[in-house]
Amino acid sequence: MAKGNRNNNKNRNRRSDYGGGNQQKRFTEQVKDCTYKDGITVKELAEKINKSPAEIIKFLFMMDKMVTINASLDDETIQLIAMQYNIEITKEEEVDVNSLEDTEEDNPEDLEPRAPIVTIMGHVDHGKTTLLDNIRKTHVTEAEFGGITQHIGAYQVEVKGQKVTFLDTPGHEAFTAMRARGAKMTDIVVIVVAADDGVMPQTKEAIDHSRAAGVPMIVAVNKIDKHNANVDKVYSELADYDLMPEEWGGSTMFAKLSAKNGIGISELLEMILLQAEMMELKANPNKMATGTVVEAKLDKGRGPVATLLVQNGTLRTGDMVVAGTCIGRIRKMTDDKGMEIKSAKPSTPVEIIGLDSVPEAGDHFKAFENERLARKIADERNQQKIEAERRTTAAMSLDDLAAQIKEGNIQDLNIIVKADVNGSAEAVKSSMEKINVDGVRVNVIRATAGAISESDIMLASASNAIIYGFNVRPTAAIKKVAEENGVSIRLHNIIYKALEELEMMMKGMLAPVYEEVVTGQATVKQTFKVSKVGTIAGCMVDDGVIKRTSSCRLIRDGVVIYTGNIGSLQRFKDNAKEVSAGYECGLTIEKFNDIKEGDIIEAFESQEVKEA
Ligand code: GDP
Image (tube, rainbow, N blue to C red; front, side, top):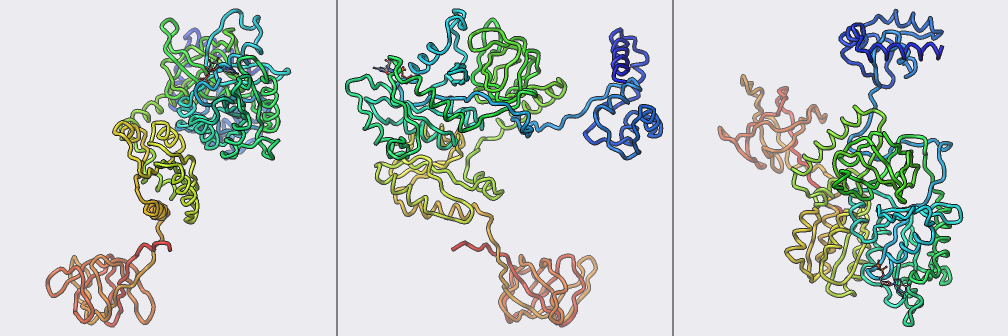
């Protein structure tokens, strides 16, 4: 049977290939909508292709398939039917245009181990580049290089027969840019600290970033060859950041290196393997690829060139790829050694050409089998981008945060504290972390002394944080960067005021709790029916106050007959905002006319309850 199908298929193709297509044309004209969704029934398909359900059931019966009119058809059967009637029919893949991320659950049996992806971070001049170069030189053979040393932003080395992928993008901006786009591409961070210099601002930043991203860290104490190297000092400085070596009773792996002289590098690589092993990193190579753009540029000769890190699935030459808002078919793919390759498995960095424009580092990419679908998604993503740019970006505004908290999307409120002195930063941090408002916790991701810097804004932007400044003022330039990145900065001089504000804000952010408060009560003395207006109740306000804007309940013999809103309220012939106890009034109830003498009208309002 299978063979017969193939022949059928071939014939069909041949017919259309030669444009011999009278028949083909006729069918295509007949069938307006040639796509179907998962779960389509015989009846629905029959309607789509202008056939009777009976005819389809009969055909399937002939093919030994017994179906009823309401049975859902599988893809294979649908294609069988399509072939029988010489119709092109494709499945509508349900894809979320908002995300190119891999959201599919993989079957555990499809998963295979993958190489860990490692980023090296640390303060400037502490030896990141030297370390990366050394690893590369010592673990990539000359032959593999083929004499070409090319930089594609990531490379893979082999250690004891196991692969390790390094992201060759030291510098926190790349990391921040990636995080800002929600890309998680690193499994392990190596924090490089020079033993002669110790923990410096960017060391702290690197730690903050890794923590915020939940990525495990391995510490590499570098430059131990230097005469003024002080490893113990580095250890104790890092202990202040909760990074403690095993020999000090902690759980962080520490390597001692001289990146320049190639000392300790194998030990570091082994630690990376060990960490990776504990993480049991796996991916499914048996599907279309998804991953992240590592870097991209416009090459004069080749057009847009992008380095992609395949994170799941297998990427192949000829695949249709959407990266960010860019699209294209992969014309050529090379690995980190400049060798042309046809396919790339998970954790492999590759350079591709074929995209129509240059994506941004940190953009997600996804490969598609269906070109039409890929184009549709790229178009929609482009449209969304344009709209997003049009809106003034206030991604991290307090209101947005509030809205997100309300939706239950945020449980941790990330905060960056900057103060004039270190002591007060720490004090603010610990006080802030004590604030506890139901469901939301304060998480101070950085608390340091000094002016609010661009790096603070970047970290805030990447981790949805609010910046609190104490006795510090941002410069106009920094304010602008904050605005552009939609980062909120709150400035205070007095700590308790800031704490108060934060707490109020968190309360305001939580869905406000409303409580009903009865404001007044009136008795209906008379009723008048007025055409177009309905029943007007002449009342005496017995208690409290009845407001025009109040909600009300109509109570008859102690039973609530109706709950709604006051429609109109009058004193004599004039409209009144409110009428107090002891006065007469006329009122109507919105959408309710069955008011009788002796009814009680109770006015109430919803008032927000501030949590204690
Ligand atoms: P990066 O800014 O972190 O990438 O640092 P580099 O790798 O550019 O290193 C900064 C300087 O430190 C360079 O002059 C390196 O030669 C030197 N350096 C790096 N590692 C070592 C080391 O292990 N020992 C010594 N003595 N110098 C080193």
